[in-house]
Length: 224
Image 1 (cartoon, rainbow, N blue to C red):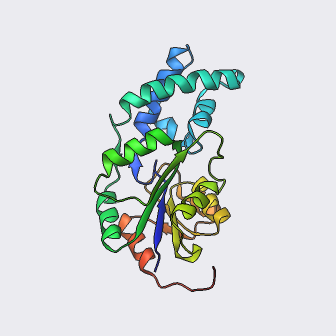
Image 2 (image 1 turned 90 degrees about the horizontal axis):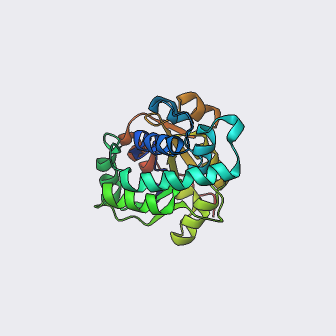
């Protein structure tokens, strides 16, 4: 049985895509660049705000300076509108409460900037006692670098065999692989099932209830 479950945020716990897309379009519009349909954004997200903006910009203007300018506009807008259309995926609040009642330690590991992660978690999941809520911080690498997982394990010491990492993208599956913890790829998020399989998800789940079943499985006691 697992003891710690680490969740990605966007596309895993919360459907944030419309608010992310709207904020990016605002930033693009502010500098006269073409906007994108909100349906385009699931393939732009997953590696943090700077990469989102870089992907949204026309190829010939993807300079560091432009990304920085648009990032400021993005954060300005997103800070005021990040809960306009965002909702938890069906069954997520109930699943989190069930895991909490089972005595699981729960954590978040996101490539979204820290302030937004903390505010979204507090807004949508006030009944959950999170062991750690980690977002992107200046000077620290983003996923799939496993540093964010190691940071959580430093705050919540847990044997790796007792950890489950849950996410919706290949970035998440690679993060778990590099951290040497079990992964579960969710099919309700932003990325296709093929991406999860191609990135060697240890488990594929179609409903939040299946995460509980994985957590309850007996495990081998082989690693430190």
